[in-house]
Length: 121
Image (cartoon, rainbow, N blue to C red):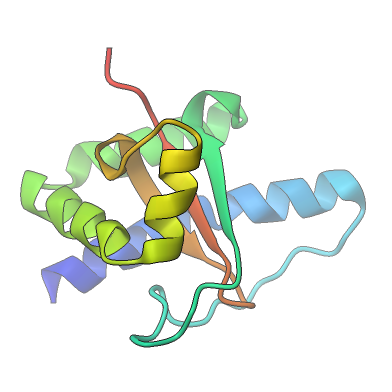
């Protein structure tokens, strides 16, 4: 149950990212989300990788606050889930990244996965 709460919190925080992008482009924001994780056996139609540093400061602070409240176990569960999705793993590898650099994830209405990455310094 705690793991689902972690994913739900990440989704709630990150939902501002697509809404912000849609408002900037003139699209109405999407207020509805499907399940916070792709269904087993269902292919992910798209994977988008976004560096935390490229997001608006307000969103960066929200993601940072959520990550700070997450346990190491929660983050390990998130990263194992990403590693279990071939599409997500391949998209990360293509950019020279891995799941250890993912701090949050969001599944949009169409099942597209957005991964928020942050390099540890």
